[in-house]
Image 1 (tube, protein in one colour):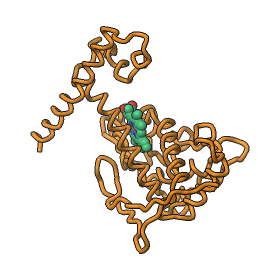
Image 2 (cartoon, rainbow, N blue to C red; image 1 turned 180 degrees about the vertical axis):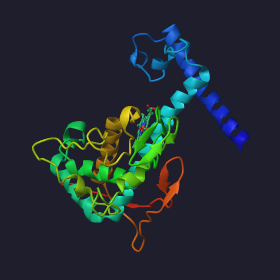
Image 3 (tube, helix red, strand yellow; image 1 turned 30 degrees about the horizontal axis):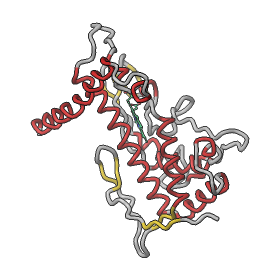
Image 4 (cartoon, rainbow, N blue to C red; image 1 turned 90 degrees about the vertical axis):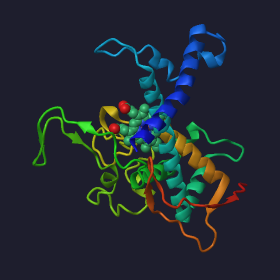
Length: 278
Ligand code: HEM
């Protein structure tokens, strides 16, 4: 098992390090100066000159690989899994899919594309994505935290240096906070929605933590805004273009399976029917 893990790690290093080194060389030689691609700042570029505060040393090759793969893994599987859960719920709840389709159609003109501006006028779309993240957070734990001093919480002693984990899914399923927590009801996010203002939910838990699919505190996911935007964009386009359903007699199986994230044990195999908007 341990040898297998080391093997995977060494494969990861050999694939990513070649790309990282190629990028570093390109930057050094300033090949293609003036062309757009080279003027773009890549995530890895920001790591080359980092000096660690304690020792002043630069990041090692292995550390560069770890940081880049964290970014790639953290940014792909999470969004893909969430998208699958959204679509599964829309297939299961055809009424919700139709309501979302009507919202999109009411906002976007026939010859217009969906964009960031018109998505701001789609509170139900945002509610569908948030409800999916509450009911099916792709990660059931966030990164563990270390306790820096002895503490007492709710009568429990938490000693210094203890490791604390957060049960993300259970927080979002708490029946004292959410009515019918296991039901998929996007409307719950619209109850406080003031039509005059843009729909904002305290997802970072700044005032109170009601769910935490992106974590919380200073290590909260740095890509919240971008990933919500991506998800909303994908969902809006998929629903606008097609009616999503299963073959007659088939049912959506919402069972979960632990992979890198919590995925569908039996992913949906939907039938897509192009929507004709007139
Ligand atoms: C649905 C999409 C996503 C979900 C649910 C998600 C969730 C999370 C969670 C739970 C954490 C740990 C936060 C904590 O411990 O408090 C995290 C960290 C992180 N996420 Fe995301 N994430 C998503 C998308 C992305 C994307 C698209 C990127 C990058 C392009 C990304 C990059 C990162 C990075 C770099 C960290 C580590 C931050 C740190 O260590 O300080 N995530 N994410």
